[in-house]
Length: 587
Ligand code: AGP
Image (cartoon, rainbow, N blue to C red):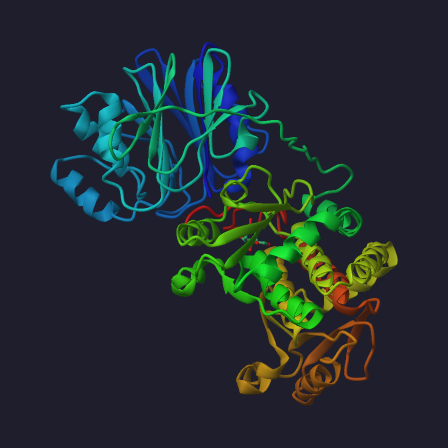
């Protein structure tokens, strides 16, 4: 959430550099953006609502700039609420990622001292607070004292017009500094600055860094100087463009056969290591958020069924309420595409303090979770640019299937199922299959609600399909376990209510068909997805019958259905759904 970028150095293209950096970080938030540069003794600011796209900047040449892409938390999406925010004298500019939890108290304190606020944001209190401290202190100690008054998990960058320095500080959200030749970059993550330098300092929580002629790292609590440790990053960050596709969404969906085959063919050692860790652990917990949480949920069914092993599941944001009984023998498996999701990063940090071991399944090299983890399992799905997760989810499921079969000493069976699922995805991506999905999208495009059911592993499939439809097409969808239907949801079924039924050829088939009959009896319109057709289905999309890996083509069909629904409903940009961001770094 929110992309931060700053430049200070011997080049005079800070505004252009910052703009290019923001374009790389826009996946973190795309409600609005803004840049501030130092022009002589003044701070000049440019702000815009909406996505950056191909924007150019009209700011003057400068050797100092800071910029921000916003995902709104406090205050609507307006130019006034966009960052950077300034103090009363327009000398201090602040960009911020996080939530200042005590901002109302601080704002009241500042209002009492006659500070004038122009926005509804929590961020704007910080330049005014620094302004207060600057009355008696120099720049760096004013920033430190002001920042230390903030409650919550925050990262900020501050520029001050009389100063030739920029200062960054953090307590939670990610922040990295890049060291160039006579210049420094600061950004929310390495991908924003890797084009300029590979010499990177990861700013840790409770640290502040002063960037000017040289770099000074300081403890926020004691004020003591800390010796910075630079990392020479040799990571390869793959670039990604849309190629012949209109949207990243379908490009990434179409990459899934390759992603699954890569795991099937090249993850022998990784799956053996992870299986061994799970085997030896005393209590294993899988956690993630959103789509990744549904991968973790699927993990509980996969490991139980295939490897006869119990895995605890938790949504990332709920895990801290379950952590009391963690021990040094516990194994935590955070699952995350970005590796930055605060609702996973925070409980993992707490689990680490309790001595638990962390085996992270992640897609982004060098991310916070990557650095937190004792054992790192990279998914190798390549950059995922669409905000809606597709190939990363399928990679998570492929990794879990292979590992469960490895733990059950049947690795080759897991590998075979994955190869077959990749072949099935290839068929689903063919024009004639997509035409069948389009017919169903026509049936559903004007509906207000869609219900989706599955049992066992297909319950995880159902909730993932639901999320795809919600975020991509903005139709309300609700996914639930088939058995729950009669416990309440059936009250919502009436003539024509669409209901998607995931019916793999496994022990859930008969029961889920009974649930479909119950919907049919109330006039529901039923779309079956699985290997076997049934009279109860009004529409049917067939997958291959590939054991637990049937889940993979079932999810792919729902991804394409969600995309087609978005197109048919005139959604402007399915790659960037409204109100979302690719990396969720606030609570
Ligand atoms: C996926 O379609 C969503 N946009 C979202 O639920 C996402 O899966 C969630 O925010 C977790 O992200 P992560 O995998 O990067 O941790």
